[in-house]
Amino acid sequence: MIKRMLKKMFLLIFVLALSCSKDSIFIPNEEAIVIIPLEKCENGFAGEYPCNDYDLLAHIPFEIIDDTPGIIGTAGNDCWGWTDPLDNKEYALMGSNKGITFIDITNPTDVVILGTLPTRTVSSSWRDVKVHNSVAYIVSEAANHGMQVFNLEKLRDVANPPIEFQSDFDYTDFGSAHNIVINESENYVYPVGTSRNGTYKGGPLFINVQDPLNPVDEGGFINYSHDAQVVTYNGPDTEHVGKEILIGSNEIEVVIVDITDKSNPIKLSSISYTNVEYTHQGWFTEDFKYFILGDELDELRKGINTRSVILDFTDLDNPLHHFDYLGNSAAIDHNGYVKGNTYYQANYTAGVRMLDLSNIENKSISEIGYFDTYPENDNSAFNGVWNVYPYFPSGNIIISDINRGFFVIRKSGS
Image (cartoon, rainbow, N blue to C red; front, side, top):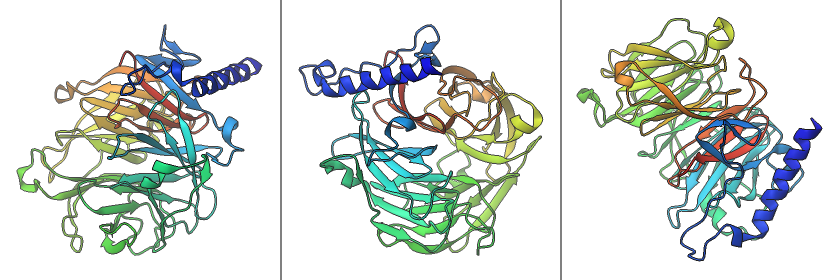
């Protein structure tokens, strides 16, 4: 324990030294930045963290900064990202039990904690955030939290960070919510996992945010969703091209709903699978042909290795089970996202696993990289990585870890 504490103190001093000596980071041509990893992935480790082909660029542990004005909290949950369309600066939105912390990661070896938007009511282990048109929408399972609306453009000019931010609008037509979903091509946000006693029994709510500071309730769909993805469909099922399709991960099944007409959502189909324990979250491949699903409790209750259930959505009215992919450990899969042919899987105690999808049609997925922020073990337990966000144009990848805070990683050599 003492050795680990000393190592963390050394890492903090190293980060501070980099922050105070930008000549060691920037080359004379100010249009480019030299990225010096905090720890390179060498011989299977980046410092204390097991890895394969991904370097550690930055780490902000909870215990170091919890007493600062830019409070990040004491336990991590969701994270998301925002790339400023004006100057391409990159910002991380790190969720915790106490709020959302905003971090400038444009130079990931010289990150700047800008401040925190505190929870609207009380602390909660569950908080979720998504971004649309430079506005963040934040929900939580904290009692009576509703949805916080925050204009991210305020991050451009923070004079003396870290500071405590205030929301620009609080939407209170619902109380708590487990998650929030956004289809970035439409002006709607979809809180899910609200009260089971509400009008829509915890199903997705349809909230029009064309005017971000004046959200408008446009109904919902009755069917409890723990998480969901909403897309403007452009896949192989020509009958539904151009329609807005919601894929709900609904505890015991996946439900496909046409929500193009918010006043008349139409359930197209549903599908379950063997050894269902808790249908948690899933994501389309970029061609909209396959849906990669995670069941959050099957590893724990069935004693199997990390399982990803691959569903064939070639026909949205008749989805099929394609195959199951089993990982290398008993760790529990949580959230996963697709970018290109890579699936980035937040895998709790096993960290983030990068899976190659290029041969998914032939029922083959292979692991091509990982970064494990929880080196103690890979057990079936709710420790380690909650979420990963891989969509920054630079290649920076952010990780929110329940126990160890905030990480920035990047593919080695990139």
